[in-house]
Amino acid sequence: MRLVLLGPPGAGKGTQAERICASHELVHLSTGDLLRAAVAAGSELGLRAKAAMDAGDLVSDEIVLALVRERLEQPDAAKGFLLDGFPRNTAQAEALDADLGDRGVQRVISMRLDDEEIMRRLLARGRKDDQEIVIRNRLEVYREETAPLIAYYEGKDLLSSIDALGTMDEVFERIQSVLADESAGAGA
Ligand code: ADP
Image (cartoon, rainbow, N blue to C red):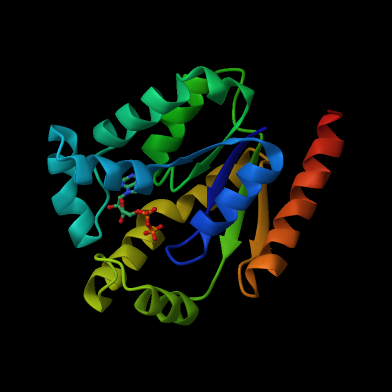
Protein backbone atom coordinates (compact mmCIF):
# COMPACT_ATOMS: atom_id res chain seq x y z
CA MET A 1 0.00 0.00 0.00
CA ARG A 2 1.01 3.56 -0.68
CA LEU A 3 -0.49 5.79 1.99
CA VAL A 4 -0.48 9.37 3.20
CA LEU A 5 -1.28 10.33 6.78
CA LEU A 6 -2.60 13.87 6.98
CA GLY A 7 -3.45 15.93 10.02
CA PRO A 8 -2.61 18.94 12.16
CA PRO A 9 0.41 18.95 14.47
CA GLY A 10 -0.45 17.02 17.61
CA ALA A 11 -2.97 14.76 15.90
CA GLY A 12 -0.79 11.78 16.75
CA LYS A 13 0.47 11.06 13.24
CA GLY A 14 3.87 9.81 14.36
CA THR A 15 2.49 7.32 16.89
CA GLN A 16 -0.17 5.99 14.55
CA ALA A 17 2.27 5.89 11.64
CA GLU A 18 4.54 3.52 13.54
CA ARG A 19 1.70 1.19 14.38
CA ILE A 20 0.32 1.22 10.85
CA CYS A 21 3.75 0.48 9.38
CA ALA A 22 4.39 -2.37 11.81
CA SER A 23 1.00 -3.89 11.10
CA HIS A 24 1.13 -3.57 7.29
CA GLU A 25 4.90 -3.85 6.72
CA LEU A 26 5.26 -0.41 5.24
CA VAL A 27 8.23 1.94 5.16
CA HIS A 28 7.56 4.87 7.50
CA LEU A 29 8.67 8.12 5.93
CA SER A 30 8.35 11.08 8.32
CA THR A 31 9.72 14.32 6.88
CA GLY A 32 9.78 15.80 10.42
CA ASP A 33 12.01 12.91 11.60
CA LEU A 34 14.23 13.13 8.50
CA LEU A 35 14.62 16.89 8.97
CA ARG A 36 15.38 16.57 12.70
CA ALA A 37 18.00 13.92 11.86
CA ALA A 38 19.57 16.25 9.28
CA VAL A 39 19.68 19.06 11.84
CA ALA A 40 21.21 16.76 14.48
CA ALA A 41 23.82 15.55 11.98
CA GLY A 42 24.76 19.14 11.24
CA SER A 43 24.58 18.60 7.48
CA GLU A 44 24.33 21.59 5.17
CA LEU A 45 20.75 20.66 4.42
CA GLY A 46 20.03 20.49 8.15
CA LEU A 47 21.51 23.91 8.74
CA ARG A 48 19.32 25.33 5.99
CA ALA A 49 16.20 23.69 7.44
CA LYS A 50 16.75 24.62 11.07
CA ALA A 51 15.56 28.24 11.13
CA ALA A 52 12.26 27.39 9.45
CA MET A 53 11.66 24.49 11.84
CA ASP A 54 12.42 26.54 14.93
CA ALA A 55 9.92 29.16 13.76
CA GLY A 56 7.24 26.59 12.88
CA ASP A 57 7.39 27.55 9.20
CA LEU A 58 7.62 25.06 6.37
CA VAL A 59 11.06 24.06 5.21
CA SER A 60 11.54 24.74 1.48
CA ASP A 61 9.96 22.30 -0.95
CA GLU A 62 13.38 21.80 -2.54
CA ILE A 63 14.92 20.45 0.68
CA VAL A 64 11.92 18.34 1.64
CA LEU A 65 11.51 16.85 -1.82
CA ALA A 66 15.20 15.93 -1.92
CA LEU A 67 14.81 14.00 1.36
CA VAL A 68 11.61 12.28 0.26
CA ARG A 69 13.01 11.27 -3.12
CA GLU A 70 16.16 9.85 -1.57
CA ARG A 71 14.09 7.69 0.79
CA LEU A 72 11.50 6.55 -1.77
CA GLU A 73 14.28 5.43 -4.11
CA GLN A 74 15.46 2.83 -1.58
CA PRO A 75 14.41 -0.66 -2.69
CA ASP A 76 12.35 -1.38 0.44
CA ALA A 77 9.96 1.49 -0.37
CA ALA A 78 8.81 -0.35 -3.50
CA LYS A 79 6.80 -2.72 -1.28
CA GLY A 80 4.77 0.10 0.19
CA PHE A 81 5.10 3.18 2.33
CA LEU A 82 3.34 5.58 4.61
CA LEU A 83 4.09 9.28 4.26
CA ASP A 84 3.81 11.15 7.57
CA GLY A 85 4.03 14.94 7.51
CA PHE A 86 4.37 14.99 3.74
CA PRO A 87 2.99 16.38 1.51
CA ARG A 88 2.34 19.59 3.44
CA ASN A 89 1.29 21.90 0.62
CA THR A 90 -0.15 21.62 -2.88
CA ALA A 91 3.22 21.98 -4.62
CA GLN A 92 4.58 18.99 -2.67
CA ALA A 93 1.46 16.94 -3.45
CA GLU A 94 1.76 17.68 -7.15
CA ALA A 95 5.47 16.85 -7.17
CA LEU A 96 4.70 13.56 -5.40
CA ASP A 97 2.01 12.68 -7.95
CA ALA A 98 4.42 13.40 -10.79
CA ASP A 99 7.19 11.32 -9.17
CA LEU A 100 4.99 8.31 -8.45
CA GLY A 101 3.30 8.26 -11.86
CA ASP A 102 1.02 5.25 -12.23
CA ARG A 103 2.09 3.86 -8.85
CA GLY A 104 0.46 6.76 -7.05
CA VAL A 105 -0.99 7.28 -3.59
CA GLN A 106 -3.80 4.81 -2.90
CA ARG A 107 -5.36 6.19 0.28
CA VAL A 108 -5.06 9.36 2.36
CA ILE A 109 -6.07 9.13 5.99
CA SER A 110 -6.97 12.51 7.40
CA MET A 111 -6.87 12.79 11.21
CA ARG A 112 -9.30 15.39 12.57
CA LEU A 113 -8.65 17.26 15.83
CA ASP A 114 -9.87 20.64 17.11
CA ASP A 115 -7.50 23.50 17.91
CA GLU A 116 -8.09 23.41 21.66
CA GLU A 117 -7.04 19.76 21.90
CA ILE A 118 -4.08 20.35 19.56
CA MET A 119 -2.78 23.13 21.80
CA ARG A 120 -3.30 21.03 24.93
CA ARG A 121 -1.39 18.07 23.49
CA LEU A 122 1.51 20.06 22.05
CA LEU A 123 2.06 22.08 25.20
CA ALA A 124 2.15 18.81 27.15
CA ARG A 125 4.64 17.29 24.68
CA GLY A 126 7.22 20.07 25.11
CA ARG A 127 9.43 19.47 22.06
CA LYS A 128 11.80 22.33 21.17
CA ASP A 129 9.33 23.78 18.64
CA ASP A 130 6.36 23.29 20.99
CA GLN A 131 6.31 26.71 22.65
CA GLU A 132 2.95 28.43 22.45
CA ILE A 133 3.95 31.11 19.93
CA VAL A 134 5.59 28.55 17.63
CA ILE A 135 2.60 26.22 17.96
CA ARG A 136 0.25 29.05 16.95
CA ASN A 137 2.33 29.63 13.85
CA ARG A 138 2.38 25.91 13.00
CA LEU A 139 -1.41 25.83 13.28
CA GLU A 140 -1.71 28.85 11.02
CA VAL A 141 0.67 27.29 8.49
CA TYR A 142 -1.32 24.06 8.71
CA ARG A 143 -4.59 25.88 8.00
CA GLU A 144 -3.22 27.89 5.10
CA GLU A 145 -0.83 25.46 3.43
CA THR A 146 -1.74 21.92 4.44
CA ALA A 147 -5.50 21.87 5.07
CA PRO A 148 -6.21 22.53 1.35
CA LEU A 149 -4.80 19.05 0.71
CA ILE A 150 -7.99 17.63 2.23
CA ALA A 151 -9.96 18.98 -0.74
CA TYR A 152 -7.12 18.07 -3.11
CA TYR A 153 -7.30 14.38 -2.17
CA GLU A 154 -11.08 14.40 -1.79
CA GLY A 155 -11.20 15.52 -5.41
CA LYS A 156 -9.16 12.46 -6.35
CA ASP A 157 -11.50 10.26 -4.29
CA LEU A 158 -8.64 9.15 -2.04
CA LEU A 159 -9.62 10.69 1.28
CA SER A 160 -10.78 8.88 4.41
CA SER A 161 -11.33 11.08 7.42
CA ILE A 162 -11.15 9.81 11.01
CA ASP A 163 -11.63 11.36 14.45
CA ALA A 164 -8.24 11.67 16.18
CA LEU A 165 -9.80 12.18 19.63
CA GLY A 166 -9.65 9.13 21.88
CA THR A 167 -7.04 6.70 23.11
CA MET A 168 -4.20 5.59 20.84
CA ASP A 169 -5.88 2.19 20.56
CA GLU A 170 -9.24 3.67 19.61
CA VAL A 171 -7.70 5.86 16.92
CA PHE A 172 -5.64 2.95 15.60
CA GLU A 173 -8.80 0.82 15.33
CA ARG A 174 -10.45 3.54 13.22
CA ILE A 175 -7.45 3.60 10.91
CA GLN A 176 -7.34 -0.18 10.66
CA SER A 177 -10.95 -0.30 9.58
CA VAL A 178 -10.26 2.25 6.82
CA LEU A 179 -7.31 0.12 5.67
CA ALA A 180 -9.33 -3.10 5.79
CA ASP A 181 -11.83 -1.49 3.40
CA GLU A 182 -8.96 -0.32 1.22
CA SER A 183 -7.44 -3.81 0.95
CA ALA A 184 -10.87 -5.33 0.24
CA GLY A 185 -11.62 -2.65 -2.35
CA ALA A 186 -8.32 -3.14 -4.10
CA GLY A 187 -8.97 -6.87 -4.25
CA ALA A 188 -5.50 -7.57 -2.88
P1 ADP B 1 4.26 18.37 13.58
O1 ADP B 1 3.40 17.58 12.65
O2 ADP B 1 4.05 18.02 15.02
O3 ADP B 1 4.21 19.85 13.33
P2 ADP B 1 6.64 17.37 12.21
O4 ADP B 1 7.62 16.52 12.92
O5 ADP B 1 5.83 16.74 11.14
O6 ADP B 1 5.77 17.99 13.36
O7 ADP B 1 7.37 18.64 11.56
C1 ADP B 1 8.20 19.48 12.32
C2 ADP B 1 8.69 20.65 11.44
O8 ADP B 1 9.46 20.14 10.33
C3 ADP B 1 7.58 21.47 10.77
O9 ADP B 1 7.08 22.47 11.63
C4 ADP B 1 8.30 22.02 9.55
O10 ADP B 1 9.13 23.12 9.89
C5 ADP B 1 9.20 20.88 9.14
N1 ADP B 1 8.56 19.97 8.14
C6 ADP B 1 8.19 18.67 8.33
N2 ADP B 1 7.67 18.15 7.21
C7 ADP B 1 7.69 19.15 6.28
C8 ADP B 1 7.27 19.24 4.93
N3 ADP B 1 6.70 18.20 4.28
N4 ADP B 1 7.46 20.42 4.29
C9 ADP B 1 8.01 21.46 4.90
N5 ADP B 1 8.43 21.45 6.17
C10 ADP B 1 8.28 20.30 6.87
